[in-house]
Image (cartoon, rainbow, N blue to C red; front, side):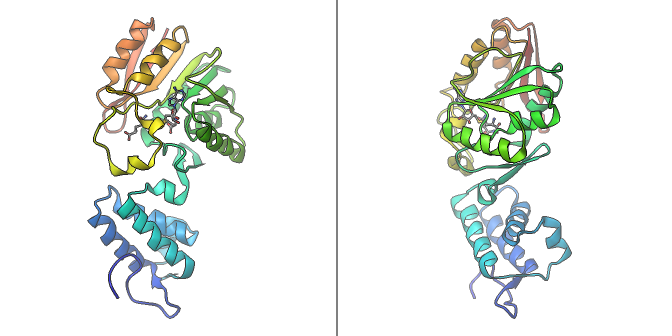
Length: 280
Ligand code: SAM
Ligand code: GLN
């Protein structure tokens, strides 16, 4: 038979062993130059089988057949040809200690955004916190999970995003208030935000075309939303904003101009200044 995901020696029931299914998927993923071919193959196959990744290692002879084989083949096609992010294919993404449901109504939460949660962990007892542009609810929910004493609101302009966030909150049993708003309304002690910050017209990884435009783009220099957010946050005790590569100095200047007295930049694991924390 011709190559492609799922090709290999056919088992007695028409399936292929896990090992062969992974190998042929890897050929396709490598050829498509996705960033993390082995991880993607394992996460997708584990999902297809309703197992976890260690189960694949423990039992490489397990047969992949029937609906699982068909789902896996289709997922590898969508990953390699359409460049759909793995998180949308499996409908889940890990963030801090939580597993969040995600779909194309919301940005896939990124590991570097966990820095915003870390900034939130430093807040005083009982602080009123707003996560502006909450998307899947990642920051708001992870912070509530780790600091139940905080009073947390998640806002978004997108009602679709809020539907995803509130469903995550309900499923995880985490009490966050969800509010549709441009930026935020009302009084808070801290504003945390991963706003859209990509420059309009920037060359992007093909995966990003599957994510909501309103979650990514913010004008010619990517700072349209941040500029308004920093102004709106004037007088708030703590502001922590995620920024794009090369934007931290400009955003720190905006925060100082808005009257914040101490302004610090925090690097992500790649050494890129990723979060600006401002206090007044
Ligand atoms: N906080 C989530 C995360 O980190 O995974 C999602 C961040 S995503 C980069 C930005 C989010 O901000 C999107 O959900 C988008 O709909 C929302 N957004 C864009 N402009 C906004 C505005 N003016 N006010 C509130 N939310 C906004
Ligand atoms: N982290 C996203 C990227 O991959 C951008 C998210 C955002 O605009 N906040 O570029």
